[in-house]
Length: 375
Image (cartoon, rainbow, N blue to C red; front, side):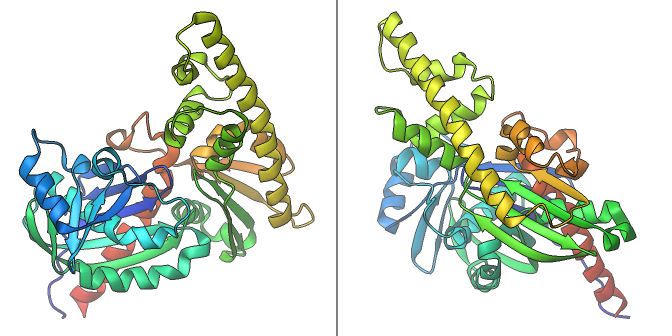
Protein backbone atom coordinates (compact mmCIF):
# COMPACT_ATOMS: atom_id res chain seq x y z
CA UNK A 1 0.00 0.00 0.00
CA UNK A 2 1.22 3.53 -0.77
CA UNK A 3 1.03 6.53 1.53
CA UNK A 4 -2.39 7.85 2.39
CA UNK A 5 -3.45 10.49 -0.14
CA UNK A 6 -4.96 13.82 0.86
CA UNK A 7 -6.89 15.96 -1.64
CA UNK A 8 -5.55 19.46 -2.31
CA UNK A 9 -6.87 22.26 -0.10
CA UNK A 10 -8.11 24.13 -3.14
CA UNK A 11 -8.88 23.09 -6.71
CA UNK A 12 -9.07 25.96 -9.16
CA UNK A 13 -9.67 26.25 -12.92
CA UNK A 14 -8.97 29.54 -14.69
CA UNK A 15 -10.00 30.86 -18.10
CA UNK A 16 -7.97 33.97 -18.98
CA UNK A 17 -10.45 35.76 -21.21
CA UNK A 18 -9.76 39.12 -22.80
CA UNK A 19 -12.72 40.71 -21.01
CA UNK A 20 -12.23 38.96 -17.66
CA UNK A 21 -10.49 36.17 -15.82
CA UNK A 22 -13.19 33.61 -15.12
CA UNK A 23 -12.89 30.53 -12.99
CA UNK A 24 -14.29 27.90 -10.68
CA UNK A 25 -12.68 26.89 -7.39
CA UNK A 26 -13.54 24.60 -4.50
CA UNK A 27 -12.25 23.42 -1.13
CA UNK A 28 -11.67 19.79 -0.08
CA UNK A 29 -15.42 19.38 0.48
CA UNK A 30 -16.07 20.59 -3.09
CA UNK A 31 -17.91 23.71 -2.00
CA UNK A 32 -17.75 25.43 -5.39
CA UNK A 33 -17.57 29.15 -6.06
CA UNK A 34 -17.05 31.17 -9.22
CA UNK A 35 -14.30 33.73 -9.71
CA UNK A 36 -14.56 36.85 -11.84
CA UNK A 37 -11.71 39.36 -12.09
CA UNK A 38 -11.16 42.26 -14.46
CA UNK A 39 -8.43 41.48 -17.03
CA UNK A 40 -6.06 44.32 -16.16
CA UNK A 41 -2.54 43.68 -14.87
CA UNK A 42 0.30 46.13 -14.22
CA UNK A 43 3.83 45.71 -12.88
CA UNK A 44 4.82 48.32 -10.28
CA UNK A 45 7.73 49.02 -7.94
CA UNK A 46 7.11 47.63 -4.42
CA UNK A 47 7.16 51.21 -3.10
CA UNK A 48 3.93 51.97 -5.04
CA UNK A 49 2.13 49.12 -3.29
CA UNK A 50 3.59 50.07 0.09
CA UNK A 51 2.25 53.61 -0.40
CA UNK A 52 -1.16 52.29 -1.48
CA UNK A 53 -1.45 49.99 1.54
CA UNK A 54 -0.44 52.76 3.96
CA UNK A 55 -2.89 55.32 2.57
CA UNK A 56 -5.96 53.29 1.54
CA UNK A 57 -9.29 53.88 3.23
CA UNK A 58 -11.90 51.16 3.74
CA UNK A 59 -11.78 47.42 3.11
CA UNK A 60 -12.55 45.88 -0.28
CA UNK A 61 -13.22 42.25 -1.18
CA UNK A 62 -10.09 40.25 -2.07
CA UNK A 63 -11.18 40.03 -5.72
CA UNK A 64 -11.13 43.86 -5.87
CA UNK A 65 -7.87 44.43 -4.00
CA UNK A 66 -5.45 41.84 -5.38
CA UNK A 67 -1.73 42.30 -5.76
CA UNK A 68 1.18 39.88 -5.51
CA UNK A 69 4.94 40.20 -5.20
CA UNK A 70 7.21 37.38 -6.32
CA UNK A 71 11.00 37.51 -6.82
CA UNK A 72 10.90 41.27 -6.09
CA UNK A 73 8.42 41.79 -8.94
CA UNK A 74 5.15 43.38 -7.87
CA UNK A 75 1.96 42.95 -9.90
CA UNK A 76 -1.44 44.55 -9.35
CA UNK A 77 -4.28 42.50 -10.81
CA UNK A 78 -7.94 42.96 -11.70
CA UNK A 79 -10.15 45.80 -10.50
CA UNK A 80 -7.40 47.40 -8.39
CA UNK A 81 -5.09 47.52 -11.42
CA UNK A 82 -7.90 48.97 -13.53
CA UNK A 83 -9.26 51.56 -11.12
CA UNK A 84 -6.19 52.73 -9.20
CA UNK A 85 -3.07 52.07 -11.26
CA UNK A 86 -4.13 52.51 -14.92
CA UNK A 87 -3.50 48.89 -15.83
CA UNK A 88 -4.53 47.65 -19.25
CA UNK A 89 -6.12 44.37 -20.37
CA UNK A 90 -3.12 43.49 -22.55
CA UNK A 91 -5.11 42.41 -25.57
CA UNK A 92 -1.99 42.60 -27.73
CA UNK A 93 0.06 40.49 -25.31
CA UNK A 94 0.26 36.72 -25.20
CA UNK A 95 -2.13 35.43 -22.55
CA UNK A 96 0.44 33.21 -20.85
CA UNK A 97 2.68 36.23 -20.16
CA UNK A 98 0.02 37.66 -17.88
CA UNK A 99 -1.33 34.32 -16.73
CA UNK A 100 1.41 33.95 -14.10
CA UNK A 101 0.50 36.96 -11.90
CA UNK A 102 -3.21 36.42 -12.62
CA UNK A 103 -2.95 32.84 -11.34
CA UNK A 104 -1.11 33.88 -8.17
CA UNK A 105 -3.72 36.56 -7.52
CA UNK A 106 -6.60 34.14 -8.17
CA UNK A 107 -5.09 31.59 -5.79
CA UNK A 108 -4.86 34.27 -3.09
CA UNK A 109 -8.47 35.35 -3.69
CA UNK A 110 -9.68 31.73 -3.47
CA UNK A 111 -7.66 31.18 -0.28
CA UNK A 112 -9.25 34.22 1.34
CA UNK A 113 -12.77 33.22 0.33
CA UNK A 114 -12.23 29.65 1.57
CA UNK A 115 -10.50 30.89 4.74
CA UNK A 116 -7.32 28.89 4.14
CA UNK A 117 -4.16 29.53 6.08
CA UNK A 118 -1.04 30.96 4.48
CA UNK A 119 0.37 27.52 3.73
CA UNK A 120 -1.74 25.08 1.71
CA UNK A 121 -1.86 22.82 -1.34
CA UNK A 122 -3.51 23.54 -4.68
CA UNK A 123 -4.50 21.80 -7.89
CA UNK A 124 -4.61 24.25 -10.80
CA UNK A 125 -5.90 23.89 -14.36
CA UNK A 126 -5.94 26.58 -17.02
CA UNK A 127 -7.47 27.20 -20.43
CA UNK A 128 -5.31 28.90 -23.08
CA UNK A 129 -5.79 29.85 -26.75
CA UNK A 130 -4.83 26.99 -29.07
CA UNK A 131 -1.98 29.12 -30.43
CA UNK A 132 -0.52 29.41 -26.90
CA UNK A 133 -1.37 25.91 -25.70
CA UNK A 134 2.27 24.81 -25.66
CA UNK A 135 3.08 27.74 -23.34
CA UNK A 136 1.32 25.82 -20.59
CA UNK A 137 4.60 24.02 -19.90
CA UNK A 138 6.38 27.32 -19.31
CA UNK A 139 3.58 28.56 -17.09
CA UNK A 140 3.67 25.33 -15.10
CA UNK A 141 7.39 25.80 -14.45
CA UNK A 142 6.85 29.41 -13.35
CA UNK A 143 4.01 28.44 -11.03
CA UNK A 144 5.87 25.60 -9.32
CA UNK A 145 8.53 28.08 -8.16
CA UNK A 146 6.38 31.21 -7.79
CA UNK A 147 3.70 29.60 -5.65
CA UNK A 148 6.26 28.41 -3.10
CA UNK A 149 6.66 31.90 -1.70
CA UNK A 150 4.85 35.07 -2.75
CA UNK A 151 3.63 38.15 -0.94
CA UNK A 152 0.00 39.27 -0.83
CA UNK A 153 -2.09 41.87 1.04
CA UNK A 154 -2.47 39.33 3.86
CA UNK A 155 1.19 38.35 4.10
CA UNK A 156 3.42 35.73 2.55
CA UNK A 157 1.80 32.62 1.11
CA UNK A 158 3.37 29.25 0.42
CA UNK A 159 1.49 26.90 -1.91
CA UNK A 160 2.38 23.35 -2.87
CA UNK A 161 1.20 22.75 -6.44
CA UNK A 162 0.01 19.13 -6.37
CA UNK A 163 -1.61 18.91 -9.81
CA UNK A 164 -1.51 21.00 -12.97
CA UNK A 165 -3.24 20.76 -16.34
CA UNK A 166 -3.56 22.97 -19.38
CA UNK A 167 -6.08 22.60 -22.18
CA UNK A 168 -6.82 24.79 -25.21
CA UNK A 169 -9.85 27.08 -25.05
CA UNK A 170 -12.94 24.99 -25.68
CA UNK A 171 -11.19 22.04 -24.03
CA UNK A 172 -13.53 22.00 -21.04
CA UNK A 173 -16.55 21.96 -23.33
CA UNK A 174 -14.95 19.26 -25.48
CA UNK A 175 -14.07 16.96 -22.57
CA UNK A 176 -17.63 17.08 -21.23
CA UNK A 177 -19.14 16.55 -24.69
CA UNK A 178 -16.83 13.61 -25.34
CA UNK A 179 -17.81 12.07 -22.00
CA UNK A 180 -21.48 12.48 -22.91
CA UNK A 181 -20.94 10.74 -26.26
CA UNK A 182 -18.99 7.85 -24.73
CA UNK A 183 -17.75 5.33 -27.31
CA UNK A 184 -19.89 6.99 -29.98
CA UNK A 185 -17.25 9.77 -30.01
CA UNK A 186 -14.86 7.31 -31.67
CA UNK A 187 -17.14 7.20 -34.70
CA UNK A 188 -17.85 10.93 -35.01
CA UNK A 189 -16.22 14.05 -36.39
CA UNK A 190 -17.02 16.95 -34.07
CA UNK A 191 -15.90 20.58 -34.17
CA UNK A 192 -15.90 22.76 -31.05
CA UNK A 193 -16.15 26.43 -32.02
CA UNK A 194 -15.33 28.84 -29.20
CA UNK A 195 -15.83 32.55 -29.87
CA UNK A 196 -14.82 34.84 -27.03
CA UNK A 197 -13.89 38.44 -26.41
CA UNK A 198 -10.39 38.27 -27.87
CA UNK A 199 -10.15 35.04 -29.86
CA UNK A 200 -12.12 32.60 -31.97
CA UNK A 201 -10.87 29.02 -31.65
CA UNK A 202 -11.71 25.72 -33.29
CA UNK A 203 -10.99 22.18 -32.09
CA UNK A 204 -11.74 19.28 -34.43
CA UNK A 205 -12.08 15.76 -33.05
CA UNK A 206 -12.06 12.79 -35.42
CA UNK A 207 -12.69 9.27 -34.16
CA UNK A 208 -12.40 10.36 -30.53
CA UNK A 209 -9.21 12.39 -30.74
CA UNK A 210 -8.50 16.08 -31.34
CA UNK A 211 -6.32 16.39 -34.44
CA UNK A 212 -6.76 20.07 -35.25
CA UNK A 213 -6.51 23.20 -33.13
CA UNK A 214 -6.51 26.72 -34.52
CA UNK A 215 -7.07 30.24 -33.22
CA UNK A 216 -7.76 33.62 -34.81
CA UNK A 217 -8.04 37.13 -33.38
CA UNK A 218 -11.67 37.38 -34.52
CA UNK A 219 -13.19 37.77 -31.09
CA UNK A 220 -15.77 40.34 -29.97
CA UNK A 221 -13.06 42.98 -29.77
CA UNK A 222 -12.96 43.05 -33.59
CA UNK A 223 -16.59 44.17 -33.73
CA UNK A 224 -15.90 46.83 -31.11
CA UNK A 225 -12.87 48.11 -33.03
CA UNK A 226 -14.94 48.36 -36.21
CA UNK A 227 -17.47 50.54 -34.38
CA UNK A 228 -14.69 52.70 -32.92
CA UNK A 229 -13.30 53.26 -36.42
CA UNK A 230 -16.65 54.71 -37.55
CA UNK A 231 -17.54 56.97 -34.64
CA UNK A 232 -15.22 59.44 -32.90
CA UNK A 233 -15.47 60.47 -29.27
CA UNK A 234 -16.69 57.17 -27.83
CA UNK A 235 -15.77 56.17 -24.25
CA UNK A 236 -13.23 53.49 -23.42
CA UNK A 237 -13.14 50.27 -25.41
CA UNK A 238 -14.22 48.32 -22.32
CA UNK A 239 -17.28 50.55 -21.77
CA UNK A 240 -18.25 50.38 -25.43
CA UNK A 241 -17.85 46.60 -25.52
CA UNK A 242 -19.98 46.19 -22.41
CA UNK A 243 -22.73 48.43 -23.80
CA UNK A 244 -22.84 46.63 -27.17
CA UNK A 245 -22.91 43.22 -25.49
CA UNK A 246 -25.71 44.19 -23.09
CA UNK A 247 -27.72 45.84 -25.87
CA UNK A 248 -27.83 42.47 -27.66
CA UNK A 249 -28.94 41.91 -31.23
CA UNK A 250 -31.97 44.15 -30.67
CA UNK A 251 -29.62 47.01 -29.68
CA UNK A 252 -31.69 48.21 -26.74
CA UNK A 253 -31.17 51.95 -26.45
CA UNK A 254 -31.13 51.93 -22.62
CA UNK A 255 -27.66 50.38 -22.77
CA UNK A 256 -26.36 52.55 -25.63
CA UNK A 257 -27.80 55.96 -24.65
CA UNK A 258 -25.28 56.50 -21.78
CA UNK A 259 -22.54 56.57 -24.45
CA UNK A 260 -23.97 59.73 -26.05
CA UNK A 261 -22.07 62.87 -25.06
CA UNK A 262 -24.57 65.61 -25.83
CA UNK A 263 -26.88 66.97 -23.14
CA UNK A 264 -29.30 68.31 -25.78
CA UNK A 265 -32.13 65.72 -26.14
CA UNK A 266 -32.44 66.00 -29.93
CA UNK A 267 -28.70 65.77 -30.51
CA UNK A 268 -28.44 62.97 -27.99
CA UNK A 269 -31.05 60.94 -29.87
CA UNK A 270 -29.15 61.53 -33.12
CA UNK A 271 -25.92 60.30 -31.51
CA UNK A 272 -27.59 57.15 -30.21
CA UNK A 273 -29.14 56.42 -33.61
CA UNK A 274 -25.77 56.95 -35.28
CA UNK A 275 -24.27 54.43 -32.87
CA UNK A 276 -27.07 51.92 -33.51
CA UNK A 277 -26.56 52.25 -37.27
CA UNK A 278 -22.81 51.78 -36.85
CA UNK A 279 -23.18 48.66 -34.68
CA UNK A 280 -25.67 47.15 -37.15
CA UNK A 281 -23.34 47.74 -40.10
CA UNK A 282 -20.24 46.56 -38.21
CA UNK A 283 -22.01 43.45 -36.97
CA UNK A 284 -22.67 42.41 -40.57
CA UNK A 285 -19.03 43.11 -41.48
CA UNK A 286 -17.76 41.21 -38.45
CA UNK A 287 -20.08 38.25 -39.08
CA UNK A 288 -18.82 37.96 -42.65
CA UNK A 289 -15.18 38.01 -41.50
CA UNK A 290 -15.85 35.40 -38.81
CA UNK A 291 -17.81 33.11 -41.14
CA UNK A 292 -15.19 33.50 -43.85
CA UNK A 293 -12.54 32.29 -41.40
CA UNK A 294 -14.76 29.40 -40.30
CA UNK A 295 -15.24 28.36 -43.94
CA UNK A 296 -11.46 28.29 -44.31
CA UNK A 297 -10.94 26.24 -41.16
CA UNK A 298 -14.01 24.01 -41.58
CA UNK A 299 -14.73 23.76 -45.33
CA UNK A 300 -18.09 22.15 -46.07
CA UNK A 301 -16.49 19.30 -47.99
CA UNK A 302 -15.10 18.11 -44.64
CA UNK A 303 -17.98 16.12 -43.18
CA UNK A 304 -19.01 17.14 -39.65
CA UNK A 305 -21.40 15.09 -37.55
CA UNK A 306 -21.83 17.94 -35.12
CA UNK A 307 -20.66 21.46 -34.21
CA UNK A 308 -20.51 22.49 -30.56
CA UNK A 309 -20.79 26.27 -30.18
CA UNK A 310 -19.62 28.06 -27.05
CA UNK A 311 -18.30 31.37 -25.73
CA UNK A 312 -19.96 34.68 -24.91
CA UNK A 313 -19.50 36.08 -28.41
CA UNK A 314 -20.90 32.91 -29.98
CA UNK A 315 -23.99 33.52 -27.86
CA UNK A 316 -24.13 37.12 -29.09
CA UNK A 317 -23.78 35.96 -32.71
CA UNK A 318 -26.16 33.02 -32.25
CA UNK A 319 -28.32 33.71 -35.29
CA UNK A 320 -25.39 34.20 -37.68
CA UNK A 321 -23.54 31.11 -36.45
CA UNK A 322 -26.61 28.87 -36.57
CA UNK A 323 -27.23 30.00 -40.15
CA UNK A 324 -23.60 29.33 -41.04
CA UNK A 325 -23.70 25.80 -39.62
CA UNK A 326 -27.21 24.98 -40.82
CA UNK A 327 -25.76 22.05 -42.81
CA UNK A 328 -24.91 20.03 -39.67
CA UNK A 329 -26.19 19.31 -36.15
CA UNK A 330 -25.58 22.10 -33.65
CA UNK A 331 -25.03 21.73 -29.92
CA UNK A 332 -24.68 24.65 -27.51
CA UNK A 333 -22.17 24.49 -24.63
CA UNK A 334 -22.22 20.67 -24.55
CA UNK A 335 -25.60 21.03 -22.81
CA UNK A 336 -23.77 22.04 -19.64
CA UNK A 337 -26.11 23.29 -16.94
CA UNK A 338 -24.29 25.37 -14.35
CA UNK A 339 -25.22 24.69 -10.71
CA UNK A 340 -27.26 27.49 -9.18
CA UNK A 341 -24.35 28.57 -6.96
CA UNK A 342 -22.24 29.22 -10.08
CA UNK A 343 -24.88 31.09 -12.03
CA UNK A 344 -24.36 34.81 -12.55
CA UNK A 345 -26.31 37.05 -14.89
CA UNK A 346 -23.15 38.97 -15.83
CA UNK A 347 -21.25 35.80 -16.73
CA UNK A 348 -24.05 33.79 -18.29
CA UNK A 349 -22.73 30.86 -20.33
CA UNK A 350 -19.19 32.26 -20.37
CA UNK A 351 -18.34 30.09 -17.36
CA UNK A 352 -19.26 26.82 -19.12
CA UNK A 353 -15.79 26.11 -20.52
CA UNK A 354 -14.14 26.62 -17.12
CA UNK A 355 -16.83 24.53 -15.40
CA UNK A 356 -16.45 21.72 -17.94
CA UNK A 357 -12.70 21.78 -17.35
CA UNK A 358 -13.32 21.79 -13.60
CA UNK A 359 -15.45 18.64 -13.77
CA UNK A 360 -12.84 16.90 -15.93
CA UNK A 361 -9.97 18.05 -13.71
CA UNK A 362 -11.69 16.78 -10.55
CA UNK A 363 -11.69 13.31 -12.09
CA UNK A 364 -8.01 13.59 -13.01
CA UNK A 365 -7.03 14.69 -9.51
CA UNK A 366 -9.14 11.95 -7.87
CA UNK A 367 -7.62 9.28 -10.14
CA UNK A 368 -4.06 10.32 -9.29
CA UNK A 369 -4.88 10.32 -5.59
CA UNK A 370 -6.30 6.83 -5.88
CA UNK A 371 -3.12 5.61 -7.56
CA UNK A 372 -0.98 7.22 -4.83
CA UNK A 373 -3.11 5.69 -2.10
CA UNK A 374 -2.94 2.15 -3.51
CA UNK A 375 0.70 2.36 -4.55
